[in-house]
Length: 98
Image 1 (spheres, rainbow, N blue to C red):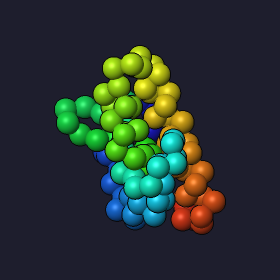
Image 2 (image 1 turned 90 degrees about the horizontal axis):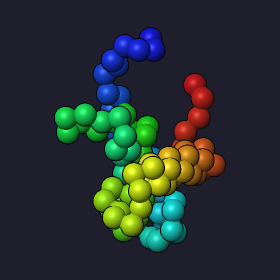
Image 3 (image 1 turned 180 degrees about the vertical axis):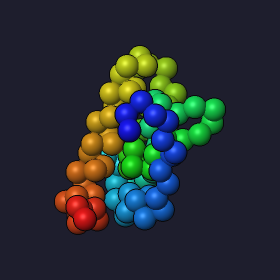
Image 4 (image 1 turned 135 degrees about the vertical axis):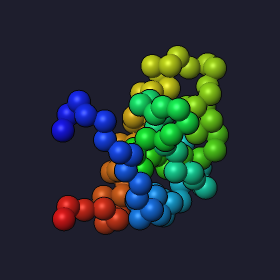
């Protein structure tokens, strides 16, 4: 259904799995947040839960508000962090194919 607006997908199990990753996928610092991707959200709504990255507070803030990075650099860092999170979830056996 490309082109049609889909409802936002919420999945508490996905977010719980992300929180099982103890260290930031970007810098390795202990203690993470499930950081949602900013691109594609509208009117205060977050994007799908599967578009989250296991980031420490510092990296999360840098991606969301980093004044030393361009918008494109921030987006690329978030995309890289989401892919790293999905990879870590798969390696730990926390996600799979049904």
